[in-house]
Amino acid sequence: MFGAAAALSLLLLAPAAMAERAASIEYEFVDRPAGVPAEFQPGPDAGVRFLRITAIDGSRVDGALTQPKTKTPADSVLVLTVHGSGGSFHGDPNGFLARLLASKGYAVLGINTRQSGSRVYTDNFLEIRRDIEAGIYTARALGYRAMVLHGHSLGNIHVQYYAANNWDPDVKAVVLTGMFANLPWKFRYVLIQNEESFAQLHAAALKTLREGKPQDVLPKHMGWITGQSVPITGQHFLTYRAESSSTADGTYWIRRVPYPVLMVRDEGDVVIQPFEPQMLLSAATAHGSLVPGIKFVSLPNSKGPNPGGHGFRDNQQPLADTIAAWLREQKL
Image 1 (cartoon, one colour):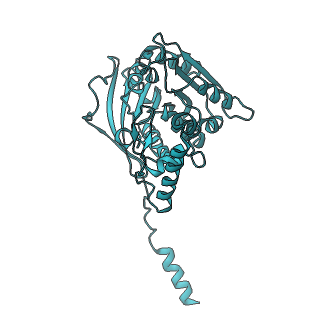
Image 2 (tube, helix red, strand yellow; image 1 turned 90 degrees about the vertical axis):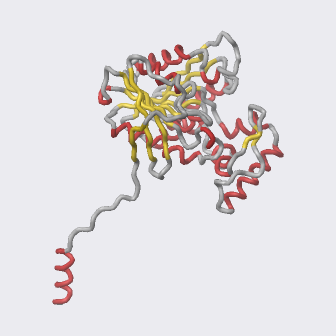
Image 3 (cartoon, rainbow, N blue to C red; image 1 turned 30 degrees about the horizontal axis):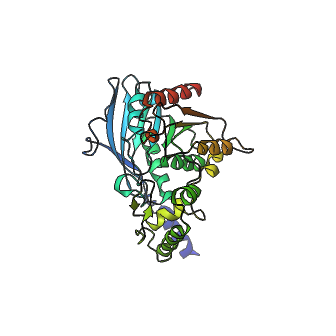
């Protein structure tokens, strides 16, 4: 009995163990990166600072924060922008939106996800959520209390997925531009239109997964809308392109987004077909949808279908005006 009591006393008197940190999100302001083009500049009424963010899994996320000079983070609405396939925070439309929305009083944090630039077609769709999360937590640490998620093209499904799975109270709305509806369906039946080629890609991707090497580039390249044949990893194919395993279906996720949604398409867009926003609109307004309200705007393009339409090259100011007007309607 004495021995047990003594052991208990020693245990109670022992100093508490120090807490340890298993993971963290870190950020630092850095000099202007060498790869950012000179034309990426804020207007005279705003300033821009560049960030290096480390996501919770250690992946690097580069970003640019454009802040109106007349506001502080605490009284600003921050728009967090996510680029399209292989894009960047300074590419169209995210780049010009940083300047134009800041001129209307909105702060903009553009991030480069882990599928930016040369990493395109190599990523795992499920991991992009961590890059957005890193941007959100960085914005909170900087003092922002109200945020809007903007996703362009491939970024549209990344934003939908994040919004549907993270009901963050400081996220107030979602903006989608150049948005497809159902990527795995579109890839197989519209973009590739070759069952033999699809089957070969699928088999090769499954092989990398079974062998524990889903990050490996497949021996067969993927045909793309540009006519090129591009390298692709097993994890990218399985999480984006294969209907049986992909989660890149906006018609599934959009109805699970608990925020008001704005969708904008340039009528000159040759990548996103006119029926695709209608598919999303139908899903978002179906019985049981969590979306409290959704608006779709189609911007006319006097040039007709053209390569710049997907990036809103001819509709820069109309796009910014449309987004700002809708945000004001949401009292943001």
